[in-house]
Length: 471
Image (cartoon, rainbow, N blue to C red; front, side, top):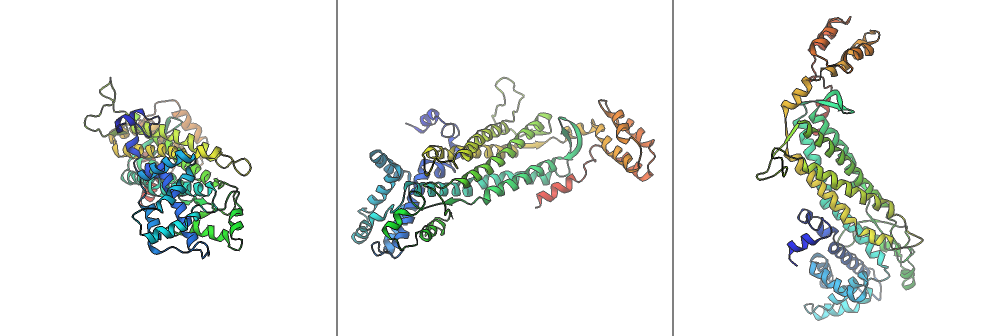
């Protein structure tokens, strides 16, 4: 089947329509990525056993160790296909990985001496491990890589775009809308800063989640390990493999208490943190969509791009709409993952296994949304005239500072007086100035109120925007 036919026949749009946009994520979160991590875990565990001073499992030569690490570093899709072929015989995916590694010990390109020492140690591949020892560590490595290599850089791009807009538009006044109605003005930069700061805090939660793994056997008690070598501190050994830096270890956080499965609480924490980021981005997508609708922003066009099949004038805010839709899909999956994965009947059931295979789907929809958001933000062009016109037609927003100054000087019923003058009415500059001139307040405050316009009534908005932009 050609790539085009595969794409149009794919059940999921992640592997169909959007396939090209997920190239960075696919090597990590696909089944190939999962198989790669399984090979890494098995070989890391095996090498560690050969370096543990166990009489029956002697140390390997430097050449043999280098060959094993090369199996991880050079692992290819063809290797995954070979493992899948073995799985068709074994009907067990982890056992297929074990058999593939053992077959690699018989590689004709190896020197006879290396081949002999690897084959002699072959029974220590997957030694004392349950499948879940391999799987949970592999999932952890996938999540660690996806977070570091894809998720955080893309979120960082969105944050940086917002911070750039916060600085660029820090002093550009904009009419606020609370409950959809005119309200105290802000600046465009301050509104972008608001979201950027929220995203920075929420992204930090993603960064701070400790990615955990266990290698403690069938029910978490090192039963098999101790039956073979009761005098070995297997907990310390397992911690060394899990927590030591790559290549001697896996560079993860050691989970010391578990049943057969790692409890998945850290996964729930990570997925909840991702969902929080995504919720903030849904908020942003809807707000920018609204600002485009009001005419505050225009969108740069690509040559040949069509907005509507029937209305030639339209430039639809499709990037923000796509982002919103994909964020919703991602959060539906992330929330199910976070609610389901920490639950397992007694010491093990398999309901997590099929669910975990959808982590890449949740990540995929998130990544699509982050890309759309970044593309959309880069297309925006400020429409200063529309912003200025809206402000100039909203003199009613100055009722707030006027009544606040009146209250400062103890004028009775300040709020009620301004309410009577402004609520539900078209308020003009002249009407407000007439009211200000009649007030019994100091001349300096009167002059300050008379000089104020909706465009200048922005408080500390510019200062706050610049502070966020400059960190």
